[in-house]
Image (cartoon, rainbow, N blue to C red):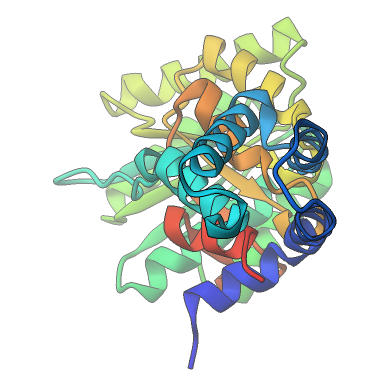
Length: 304
């Protein structure tokens, strides 16, 4: 039977193996929780990109437990699991849905994070829940991006609104909103071009795409999801900061967590920016994109 915990556990195995192995090694070698052993555990947590703040909190709780219960009574993995779960519970947030009409979701981020694939997987998810979804190919810089989205559309039987390579992305977005309204779609996922957060002119273009959609359908986009590549670790934090300054990010999608040992960055980014984490990507298949669950995530990260 499909188990969400199993899915998380498999997807986060690279982070977990390194992290748990290191913590157990330190705990086994050190008969008491000395400052030297705590320092080693700290390094292991930081290496998994849990960030300084989350690492401090876990170590502080471990010290507290050690002082009250002594070395024999404390389970470091359980303490870490509880602290990460507590930190991430407010990050759980479902995809917003408008009470009526089409819900427009803009997918943004730098090149190579998996926006196009994620857009298609989200549309598939809506479809499998009995809703209707459409895709808009607003990455008109990369000819391959339009074809990639069209391929996904054919494979998953989802309508794609697209134009030619080099077309105005704002015009494509406008036409997509009109088409989604005309067909009575529940969701429209807008695949925007990958852009570096440091490129001012491209960020301005993204603002224009959003402005044009809002003009056609007031309030659109209703969700702006920043897609981050989990394997970039803490570098993703700068991207999140900068994108959030230009367009109001309503949630994060963190992809490629199955290929990295830096899965702790999920906790670090939420802790710093307070943004909801809508979905995490734990593999290649459409069903490998899962709604974020704090308890399963923390348990998978620190499971033995």
